[in-house]
Amino acid sequence: MIFSSYPFLLIFLPVLLVVLAALQRAGSLSRCYVLVIASLGFYAWYDWRYLALILISAIVNFHIARALEHRAIRKDPGQKSLLVGGIVFNLGLLGYFKYVDFLLASVNSLLATEFPLLNVLLPIGISFFTFQQIAYLIDVHDGTEAESSFPMYLLFISFFPQLIAGPIVHHRGFMQQVRHGLAGLYKAPLVAAGVTIFTLGLAKKVLFADQIAKWSTPVFDAASQGIDLPLLESWTGAISYTFQIYFDFSGYSDMAIGLGLIFGLRLPINFLSPYKAVSITDFWRRWHITLSSFLRDYLYIPLGGNKKGRPRQYVNLMIVMLLGGLWHGAGWSFVVWGGLHGVALMLNRAWTRLTRFRLPAQFSILLTFVFVIFAWVPFRAGNMESAVEIWRGMVGLNGIALPENYADRFGALLPLVAGLDIQFVDTHLFHGVNQLMVFAGLLAVVWLLPNSVKFIGYTFEGGPCTDRPTLPGWRPLPLWALGISATFILALYYMNSAGEFLYYAF
Image 1 (cartoon, rainbow, N blue to C red):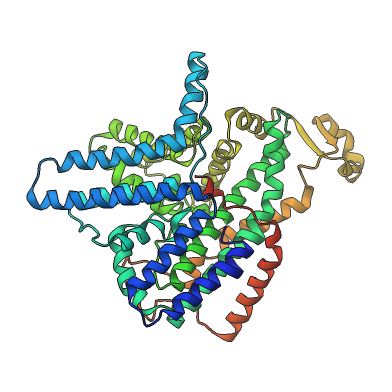
Image 2: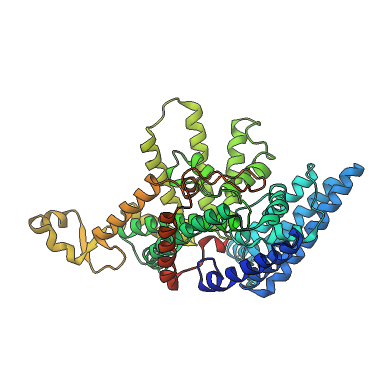
């Protein structure tokens, strides 16, 4: 079940809202139980077998955190060892379910061994709730108060709007909101804002991302089959995926925030117009913001951050980005993707340090965008053979091809075009001028229009939701209601072809 599905929108969510409304006069704990049951049911919809995994993970981490707090009070020197044990437990679960087959396959390839693969099925959302609990254990070790109520803790881990693909939330801010927000569900301004931003996210997913996938998927499928892809087909495939993942992840992030507001909770902003970034450093301040913050706070800074000299700083950057790439997927193509971003971050830091010359903002945005397109190729390809095939096409090593029906349009210039080694072939991967015009329109959307959260005026302070959130760019007026209703109905119509969110795979 995904947010952009009929079962979720027409059954799961309405039933949950009705049940919570019936419990308006009950305490926060009663509504917490309902949300926990709903969230676990949402998770079990994908594969009930892994319901035990998230429950065991939550139980173990809950008790480790309580033990950490008790040892801190007694100033027990074993507190550090307990924290390490908790981190090892979490990474062990993640490592087994996500990386064991990757490691076995890599060993077989490098050492010519024949270890059988275990074909372990990846539990959905495991990367997110694992990192969330690691952060929680570290915070408790450093002095944050541990959660005393297991139902409340379980809601922190399993809250369905952010369980599957983030954002990664911190315990203290989330639980403050739960205790305040669940005491007054269905505040009209919050619900109106939540429905609005949820609908915008739904439109991004269904009307943009899923439609663009029809262009990107055939190109990468062709590359995986070893087909030589000419220049235009390679570029249109890479650009299509660049827009697909943008609208897919942006849509999910909006829908998560919208659902949170409906339940009286603010979730962290996780997506902030990353293709407007003027550098790769700026890109990572805008893309998957909570993951970037986690890697900075719990990996980069403990490694020494910027305080151990330039060489160590660059090594730390590369370690963080390689592990960030591996977090996204168990494959060398994800490691390469992380490595490309690591190199780009090092070059960006070196450039900033060595020279005061700065490129114009528009050129910096374009340069960053082109790099991001190039780097998305191994991320999407899934293996380096397919990625290299598309890269070869992007740099022109497989020639240039145009659709057959374009030959007549060149008229007297046809011999000149032929002299440039441009071929006219029967292609279904490049869709000509119409496709380029769509790309231009999508660029206008991502570069010129405000991000959804800024458009709505959404902010995240980490504290309780108020009755009157700051929404300077939006008001619940009849015209807004009409526009949002029309958008929602249009998205419902196109939902037959809705696919899973791309980050569900991570």
